[in-house]
Length: 335
Image (cartoon, rainbow, N blue to C red; front, side, top):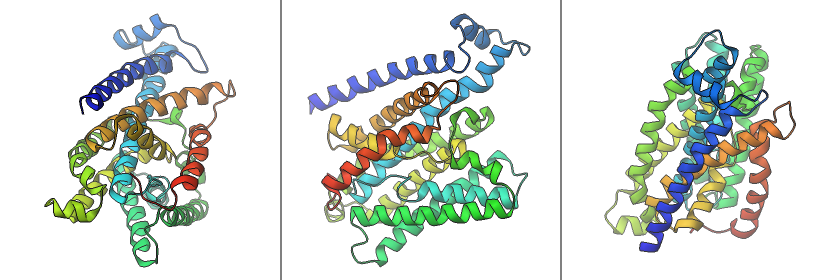
């Protein structure tokens, strides 16, 4: 037990230190390299007429913060989903939750073209809930619907369906150009105003996730065991899904759909610190933030001076790992 606690604090400290380094590198490097002195001046003595200061304040800093925030939210969401469903393939992007958010945002842009950022967040949250209800609801109606592979197939099918509807609506209402940002997530387009708006929601989702981490350890062993321990399984699942919906919806509202973060990082964290979700959830969030931050940096330097979409970079890591999970654990439950 002491060994796992020591590991948890060690990995958390390293992750936090590397996150600081990641932010510094992200702010200083890009299509246009910026000197450290200039970046510091942009923070403490901002000059609106200085182009470099504008880049730092309106693009680089929101992008760095957004990457860390989204990575942490998606990884924590994936950890909760894998624990709740005992499904090693569970994650927001695979289970249709992210696609539900994009679908709802498409509806918002088609029927409320002048909608505020708050309206966009509201639609994204509602879409996350819709995607989750559809996938988990249908899985209960099908024989073997709760198996990992079947859930992944259902999530993929429902995501494709919602994506097709979104593209059809976007084309019909001529908002394809506007909605492309959410289909092909690009962190360079993150709005500083959206970051400020998203932080309270993100904090609420993460706090709820940390609150649910303790009962999630029991639930990950099976609903019967959790019930025998006196836990309200339905309430735990409801609050867990609420946390997942909030964190996923906010992530999509900020930068669009980003896949595989919620799939990979919880498995890595579980390997590092064991099966206790009191450690898995917070460390997954830290490692997820670090992972997406570096994926963003990689996307800038793969094909300079052009940027590779962040989804392509996460897929380079995620697709092989997804296939590995299907081969090794597709027919069983998560540990």
